[in-house]
Image (spheres, rainbow, N blue to C red):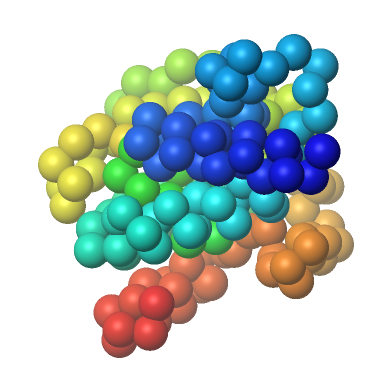
Length: 200
């Protein structure tokens, strides 16, 4: 069973890197491609992420670091633009497994859920309201925009996940690897300084 999960994780990881799928969609497509039953036990996201990092190290080591920096810089632009909502970066762009096909996921904390929409309208930004999977696996309302990334010379999906202001309280729980699941503007700036110094 564990070897099958590892195989599913490896197939899913390739789809994440090569097609930009999120982990859930990649796992579902992997079992379909492998001809496995729909009820097959799936690997966890951490296992898929490990395989993604292994795939990147093997096939994308020369391009992925620069793509990650470009995405983090674009994320920082949007965090500064939406600073009134205490934005946090999460997902693959925060954890370091993102490639040029990855989307950016930002948590916004709002006293009024419509206030972020009003801010986008004030900035003249077109957005699509939708429901996405949040960082804890829950369904979250999001405002999705297409943002041009100058360094990648293409548009990137930026998803602004809307949370209640009260959800900001309390420190986020660390994951199985001891990592914080998200970072604020200061943390993202630190990541960029480290990468420019050649440490990441």
